[in-house]
Image (cartoon, rainbow, N blue to C red; front, side, top):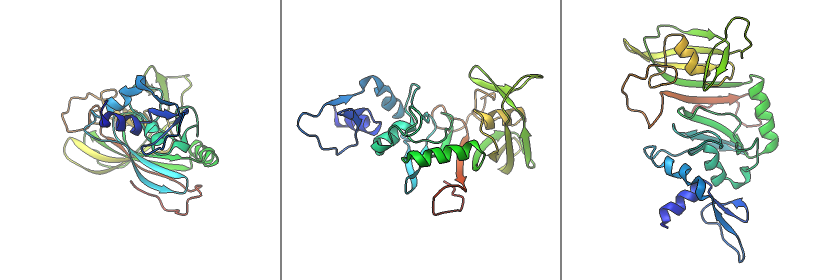
Length: 261
């Protein structure tokens, strides 16, 4: 085996010593048991196809970590392909076990094809506090999206959503669904495209992509909710959405100003 492959295993948390994931440079002691999860090597292999983009740490303070997720990576473990959770476990072994299984301290998620900022923590108490803040709507989440059509003015979408297989759709009469609200602000654009900033006032899977499509401004490159008939330069398998900022007033962080990444 080559050094490059071993480095890839280490980067994606596929190497365990005595049952614990380790980083490069870990010293081995006599009798240590080293195990490589070769069955999961496809996570690392797939990542190399994503035009060289890898997750990266963009900000830390105390136990808080903000990681930039490229398009093509899952947020958490459990699905085929690389995940940000694997990257975090490789960089911060102590984050293993924080949160639900496979989360590795991540307090929220982004769709696989969406890039942007993810918030994580290696402190179980802070994890619970942040999850409660997300559930209570105390966290502001803003996204940038490149969409079809000219968006001339701000608008809000207040459309409850229901899950149907791998997509969401508007709820039908007398049907229970999840409340979903999105605020959309145009930033710039042309005759048939717009760059918009979206703020999620709730948190439903695919909410922004679905709301924009229902409003007649599907995200360019989104094959699930749009036509996907426009050719633009994006990372492999990605659409044109990016998580721009995540901010909560209830954090124990010293900073009380929103941060944009």
